[in-house]
Length: 193
Image 1 (cartoon, rainbow, N blue to C red):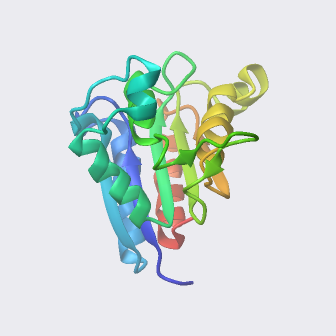
Image 2 (image 1 turned 135 degrees about the horizontal axis):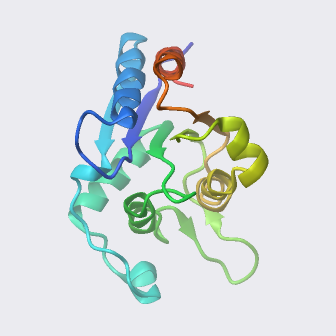
C-alpha cells in the first residue's frame, strides 16, 4: 500500500481529552503514522473562528487565518477522516460552523452559470466516524442515518471527496463496544482507510 497523506479532523466540540471521540482520533492517527503514512491532526475544539451569519460572508468574505490553515491541511491531504459525536441527531454545531467556514466557494467548490458546482476537492477520499449512545442499527433503521448521509452527500461528495466511507460507533457507554471501536480505528488507521 502506498504512503498516504492523512488529515484527521477531531470534531468533538469539547477539548477535554477524556471524550471517546478524542481517543478514537488518537488511535487512528497513531496507527496511520505507525503504518508509514503522513498524518496531521486538526482539533476543531481548539480553533477560534467566527460563525458565518450571512450568505455574502460565505460567498465573498475572507476566511480567517485559522480556517486558511485548515484549508491548507485539507488541500495537502489525500485522505480526510472526520470524527464526531452525534448530538441531537446531527453533527455538533461547532463542526457545522467549521465546515461552513472551510467549504467556501473558490476553495471547495466553484459555482457555474448552469448545473451543479464544480468540485474543487476531487482526488481525495474521506471517512466519517460518528459515535452515539444508541445502537448503530437503531440509528440506521429508525433515523435512516440521515445526518451522516447529509454530511457525506451534501457536503463531502458535493465538493469532490470520493469515496466517502463511514463507521458508526453505537453503544459507546459499553466498555466492550469501546474496545472494539478502538481496535477498528487502529486497523483503519494502519491502512489509512
